[in-house]
Image 1 (cartoon, rainbow, N blue to C red):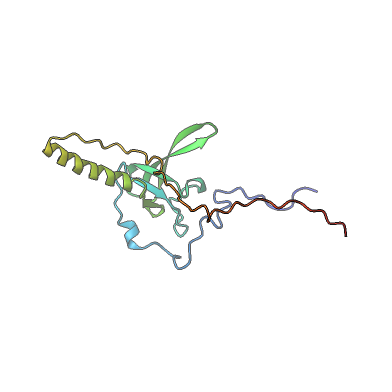
Image 2 (cartoon, rainbow, N blue to C red):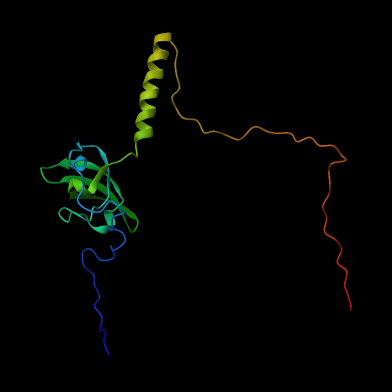
Length: 165
């Protein structure tokens, strides 16, 4: 006999846990979600809000980070890299802003740029040159462990003794 049960392969298949909202976050999004300004070049995280079905991206893009390339009245264009076999493809999708958050992925980078610019300005005022390149930490410094000869205890396995009881 053939397959009697359905084989669902719809647009939202396999999203029961992935798109479920956490405890005490159910319902429609708040006003602050709609007032977030998005500009071209911003890094955004795609996090699907299942309470809003319009402009919802496909499940693959949930949790991915992309760059805004277009801002429309109802949706925001996001460019994401997707690995297909052995190549990276740039995918461009339009997503409603309910499903987007500003990403914090480049905060440390921007902070480092500001600090470096400040250090460069100070060095230029003093007439010095400054290296802003990050250096690897390198090996830890050596340590010498000192001990008395009386405190050293050598551990060795006991010889095997066969018991014939």
